Image (cartoon, rainbow over all chains, first blue to last red; front, side, top):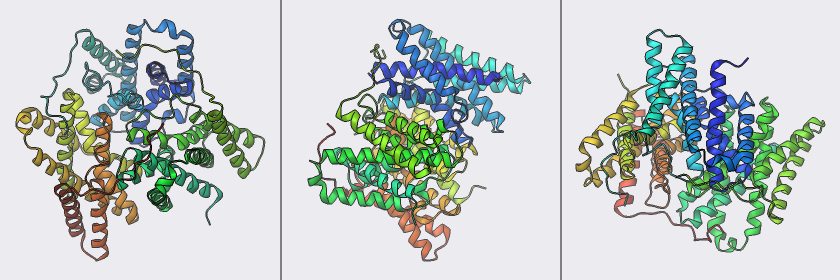
Amino acid sequence: MPTFVQILDFIGTFAFAISGIRLASANKFDWFGAYVVGFATAIGGGTIRDVLLNVTPSWMVDPMYLLCTALALFGVIIFGKYLIHLNNTFFLFDSVGLALFTVVGVQKSIALGYPFWVAIIMGCLTGSAGGVIRDVLINEIPLIFGKEIYAMACVVGGIAYWLCYMAGIKSYGCQIIGGMVVLLTRILAVKYHICLPVLNNHEKRS
Amino acid sequence: MPTFVQILDFIGTFAFAISGIRLASANKFDWFGAYVVGFATAIGGGTIRDVLLNVTPSWMVDPMYLLCTALALFGVIIFGKYLIHLNNTFFLFDSVGLALFTVVGVQKSIALGYPFWVAIIMGCLTGSAGGVIRDVLINEIPLIFGKEIYAMACVVGGIAYWLCYMAGIKSYGCQIIGGMVVLLTRILAVKYHICLPVLNNHEKRS
Amino acid sequence: MPTFVQILDFIGTFAFAISGIRLASANKFDWFGAYVVGFATAIGGGTIRDVLLNVTPSWMVDPMYLLCTALALFGVIIFGKYLIHLNNTFFLFDSVGLALFTVVGVQKSIALGYPFWVAIIMGCLTGSAGGVIRDVLINEIPLIFGKEIYAMACVVGGIAYWLCYMAGIKSYGCQIIGGMVVLLTRILAVKYHICLPVLNNHEKRS
């Protein structure tokens, strides 16, 4: 039986794989390239986390991650034409992935005995590093920089998780509340165009 | 005495170092920059593999990799002018490197007790991740995406390796057959312009 | 009480965080994005080193690195306007960071029992990989390639460290001399435009 956190992990994997495959297809990658970008987007953040925490990355133990990405690829191949107009659906997918992965990252780090500030960074990495890898692979400036609140939502959710934990709320509760906070922060930020302040513009590198 | 796999590894290192140094020189990098790009191309895939498999990267135990890259650099410095017209030679070099590294990656993962689907991914990473790092360093969209079959050849070779292994063929035989399959797949793909299908083009990110 | 090497590490972290934050601000990143780029610049090299050496990255054990980066961010936010004209000051900062991090990387690798040629590479990685990550994140060709001597200075400093060590000079002495050599090499290289030779230009990738 998969645990609650594993189920979150699989849904998040599917959601992020779709996001990577879509961008790859916009750049006219072939099926294999799209699969690789989708897979890297889905497992990239978790892999960096697991390497830093010095545990074997989840996808090397469980082939579900490969299958989830394959499923996502077939979905985009078959339903590609209908998916173009579903930007809002995809935005939701991506935000759900962000929320789920943040919770997975925080939970895993705490379970390994790391302090909370490390767990929050790991949640943030799990949620957003996959998207950075995706954007580096397709040679664009990573989306998470300079737009509406994105990775910051992971930090807010991680802090919410921590406060719940401090208040004595059980593991399930912390995960659900933490995830909801990430999701809400992200959705409200995009809906109301909430951005963090931009630094005073300095000169470009000469 | 170096083992058979180590000899494959050194030839592959030399071949990939040359490929990195050539591209660096096309971008007017200095000698040190070219050395770094050549070295990263040569050891990048194997290093990611070793970090994921949680063993010390080979180049940290054996200075041969540094020397191979130095040799490749001197080769390009001295014979640079004559090398320009040898595109076919280089294509063969790169393909040989791809084949050898795939075999090395598959073999190492199996020796560490990983299941075959992990070994195939590791073979693919060993063979192609160095080239991705090279292309990210010189700020181009990685070559392996959207052209003739490249990293897919590693997967085909990895599966061939696995089938041989299942059929009870000895280690040497699996390695030779696996490597030949990678090489043939890559050469045939380029010769007959065999490409994987491209995904239906979607809109660019807005 | 922090050790001598830890103090070097914190000053280097601050110096590199400033360099990352400045470039992020030139690219109009928001505060969070600037913090992430500053943090990645500051801890990137050391993290790659620690993953390769298979020890827990320093910033996961000590929150000082997060605080240093926060301090650097506030500094740039508050004094940003006055900082524009201080290019020479920043050049010095960056060079000091390079020198300190090289020494930290060499020292840590030796303490873990690695041979000197590995320690020199690790010093070079610690000093310069953060800057490469920074440049990949903001989607530019890494600064360390094709300009005045940069990462090469780490190699020169690492060799100086090694010679001192061989000559029986104490740990402190090796660190101070090694660091000074990096700093001087870098400053002299920029002042007198000392560059390594560039490879004969070959054709671009077709």
